[in-house]
Image (cartoon, rainbow, N blue to C red; front, side, top):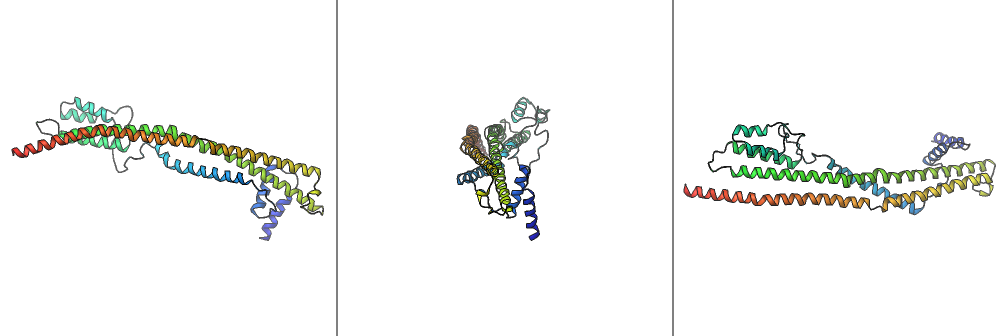
Length: 318
């Protein structure tokens, strides 16, 4: 350990001569890490408080972005156990329903499901997956429907449900796009630009402080080398005193600038505005989903009532 300390002192003395600012800062940083720095210029209490607040704000952005970045992944709610083919994803539910409505027999209906795909594969969302499964189930029932009364009520309900779920899925995608544009973009800008500006300003403060303390230590070492008390400022030459004052002025200037940058980061209304946009997008999605399902529910209820009525009549006539 003594050898290690001696090594640090040798570095300190080696940098007492004229060296680059980077080398001076590096030397001072090493001395502080080794516990060999006698004095360390203190930062203002309000500056330290601002640093803590900015660090907290940075952590908040990182935590929430780590979760909400899922909105950039279309399939974030797509069940991993589902195996859908290229044909399944080829056409939208509404397109398939249109093609099925034109089919006059089972072969044409099956062809509607295997029709050439549209421009791009259908979305992989949970709602779209439900829609595709519901429509395929509806078609399976219809293929085996031998009733003379027309379409099977369950098949009809599943088709309606498929169309509704597709609409809900599209509303979810609209929500995701809105969140990406109005929330994620804003919070990423705050994290990677505004808070980064504050980080750079704080780094400038630390560099200025290290340079100031390195200069002070160097001048004290020179005083001690002449046999004087190193803490006796009166022993400083005018040139040395002027150099220290210049470094102090720079340090104060850097602190003031960094405080201004940090206050601006903390005071800006953008993060809260972006959060409001996130909530608005979620609200619009759930509102739209509610409207779609509220419109569907009475139709399904009516089919269910009619089926029960027909069922009772069939039992009474048996």
